[in-house]
Image 1 (tube, rainbow, N blue to C red):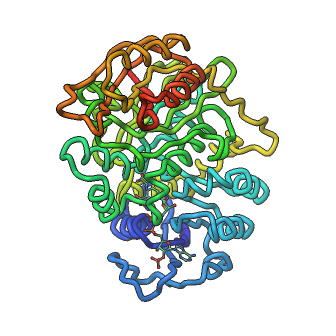
Image 2 (image 1 turned 60 degrees about the vertical axis):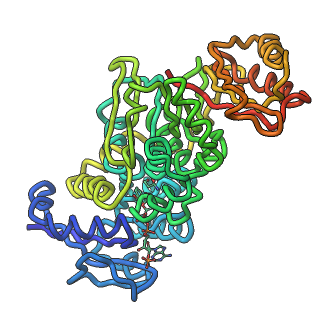
Image 3 (image 1 turned 60 degrees about the horizontal axis):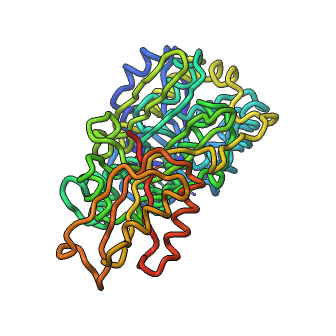
Length: 433
Ligand code: NAP
Ligand code: HSE
């Protein structure tokens, strides 16, 4: 039986899961790929670190060139993460005639064009199922299963760390920093967890999804993003009173010819599928013009769920399917026109607003007048007894709006935040019903 030699770059959380599956499921992988898949070499930074997985028979080095320069290795699995020195190593692997399987959404979001141009130049495949949604086969679904559709909208929870933190804060009242520490301990977070909590990781994944769903090449900087790092527990509580739960959502919607993209903590109506996605689970809701509403759900982070997607890709590469799919899709094409992104006057949503206002007669009317003068209609209001919530004579006022244009809302909030009766900058979160 033909043997396929594989190189593994990085044996951390995901890489150890890959080594585990390749070792423990060798027979199944051979049956499904029709070839004997051998992990020949692995590369790490610290040769002295214990890996928690057997690497017997694998040549472990701290020098990526051991993999790049080994002519017997035909597939490289990149689970190192980051963009430097990873980009150079991946480009060298492709130039050396190796297919690449990667879990690295930062690499694709920031350097997709270079990586795919190199793959095309050397006739190799790049497979990246694990880059979005951990174990959920969302890349295959968009690339193959939904290929007959024009996707019209997509709403996704794609960061397991953030969803874990929000779940713990909402259900158990855990402080943010404690929940973040737990997510790191469980192997969900990036090496630098700032990328998780400030929304960058979700934006990286949205850039990958936008490529597949809309053919749009966007850089992370083109995606308006907010993370959960500045979210106040008070907003989780008020959202609950209004029948909503707060989720970090990646949103992509066609607005006429333009594409609206954003990453932001968002109020999601309780009882809807996305609101019920808890802990490290992820979900991607895709609406296609032929299929209608679809939902993909599963574990979005962690060792084995992510390794499941990586090894699935490896089998796809060995069988030859990955090359066929991604050649046909022509992703991150050099000649692709720039994406047409929606401007704030095209973006419409319902909004949750929280103000800190002086506890005086007429203030609510002043705010309502300002919102009304910008065409923003109020759907509901919460103002608790000042005894509960007053700070220095100021009280919180929560307003839910009806559908409003983002540009009008921004103008109204700028005006309101300049009023003497308003103590702090207003809080504004989008709402998905
Ligand atoms: P990790 O635990 O930090 O592991 C990274 C591995 O790469 C480590 O073994 C590290 O070596 C090695 N490495 C890093 N830089 C290196 C260098 N310059 N030279 C040689 N080896 C180097 O990271 P991870 O959580 O497994 O994530 C890996 C990738 O998968 C990232 O792109 C991440 O975004 C993506 N991903 C992660 C998850 C998840 O749940 N963790 C899920 C989906 C996708 P040492 O161990 O010696 O330091
Ligand atoms: N840090 C990422 C997360 C890993 O928490 O979702 C999966 O991509």
